Length: 371
Image 1: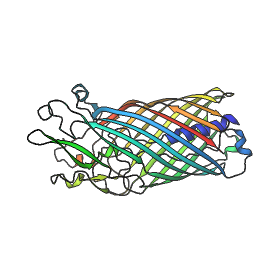
Image 2: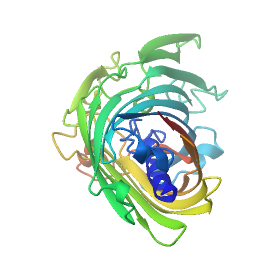
Image 3: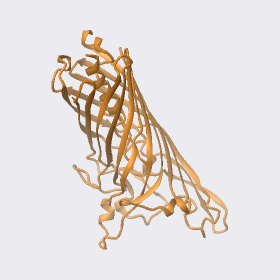
Image 4: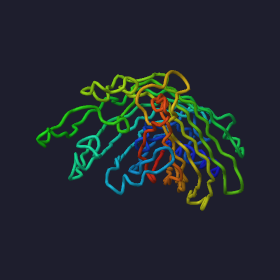
């Protein structure tokens, strides 16, 4: 039974790392449902009403610019690339009403740093002959999610496969109007700063109430190997939030003056191989896709957004010991595409196509304990 329970733990910990900001493509960080019923077979002997707490951490550094799926290598070569460094801790608690139904609450704690030339003195060697790079930052809580998940079949019956469906509500608890100082120069070359909202990619929240649909599951392939999968789509019906991107600039196109409250999606599939049942140690290898669509499924899609997606290979390692379990994974980018936004598509010539910076990889770690 422990083998089957470890599958739930794996799915739970993987799901905690489901969607995260991947650079300038502003995928709002959050967690999906944690649905694992426990850390060992003893969970099925417990009374209904078990709790599980989860801590997750993720890190990435984005700096490679893409326009469509074409990398703009000159940005790194000439030093004009934008660099986003993100650290995110996720705090979650799950109430397992019974082996099939669970409810979760997750709150992310975020710390972001963004450095660039163009947002300050500019990328031009004439305007910025010393290639000075300045930083803007954001720190605080992100958008909270409350969700529920239900296994279609009873996990306690030791079936070889199962599917869980989930529904979540995303609350705008993260600050979507974080500001910081941006360096500018007078005509005489003197430095001064102005305070305005930081880039959308490091804002802590999106300012909208959303809801998500999720699916996750597993299928035993052999005695010690299994297939796992999960999928997630966040619906954000709100069009734009109230953050004016550049209050001092009256020439900004009205379509992109405010930040868009965008949908987002993610999916994962892979194989888990048990190395040692006694030690509760397994390895996994899979693939994942995540991103922001150019158009929302519900509501308008105006405002400023950088849509796009990234496809990654995802090796990892999981463990389970008593009531404690964890997963370490390393998604490595295979394909990146900055797609055209709603604003880009309004260009009658069809030439406008914004760019975005992506990371090469991310580091994800999750630790869970049930009581």
